[in-house]
Image (cartoon, rainbow, N blue to C red; front, side, top):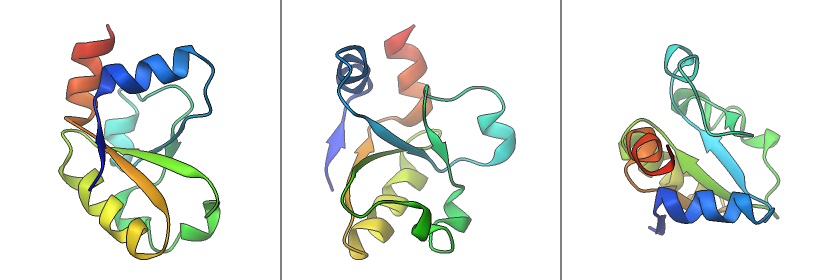
Length: 98
C-alpha cells in the first residue's frame, strides 16, 4: 500500500496541486476538525458510497491514526481506485502541519 507523510501532502496542497482527500473517521471525530477540502465518508459506508468517487481521480485517505484509512485503501484499490494512505492519520497531520 502506498503511503504519504502528512507534511508531503500539506506541501502538495500549498502548491495548488489537485489533492482529493477522503476522511473515513466517524462524524464525531470529523466534527473536531479535518483536512481542508476532505470528503467525509465513514469507513463503514465506503462500499455503499463508492459511486460518489471518480474512478479517474487519485485519492489520499485519512483516519485518526492510519489503521482505518489503510483498510479503506485496500477496499478502494480492490475496486480499481488509485489511492494512498496518509501515514499516521490526523494525529500526525496535526503534529506536522501546525
